[in-house]
Image (cartoon, rainbow, N blue to C red; front, side):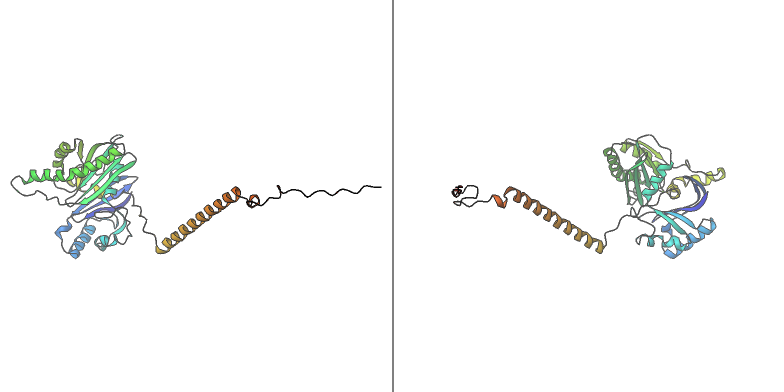
Length: 323
């Protein structure tokens, strides 16, 4: 099985897993969690990242789930390269970069289908949310956005208030995804959550009450291959490493077509103008032919002037007789 480092990277997370991937199956060999916010200086974070790579024996070959990545972006896009500087400075060779929505779609593919209906997959991090709705063989909806998960985290009932504040903020986005799935003829039957938000399972009941559908939290290692002696050490981080592990099997984003170049635009204008001239010429020729058939020159007459057909014949001369 090919070994690589699967990474989820964003403003609030750097989850890394040494994995072995083959035919859609992911074996987790080791994990490392680093909070970039704890290292405000870019250089200090790079140093810690490099030390973790060496200590955990993480392969240099890496696939990355990048938060803030525009959908359809490619690893070599100019807007993407600056986002990878710290990872590359730490010694990783990035071979693939995908968005959180792409990673969720990959996670949905490797998990066992829940039936013919659609499932909503929700990655909830402290600073970002990704939503994907899929049914077997087709993605129906994808959306990601940044947010502040500390909303409502103050007061005497801070924990309970924050929980329902988060749900009230998330619910409209999830309902929009569910409405889009219904519009395409497949209602959402279940919601699956993962992410690094603390106490993620506490959102289960409020989400059920708000959305009236089944909710499952990926806070176990189900679907991942883990050696028995590592299960206890990895169990607590299970929901936080799901997207990182999905990077190992996620498909590369297709590059979006860019705007046409100036020469292409000029050629397009010339071709359109030529087509318009040809069309006008064809219309004019058709009109001329129709007019010519309806009024031939040989049938024109002048009022008061006899025609050759109607003019009187001259008198015949008497023929001479033989004598």
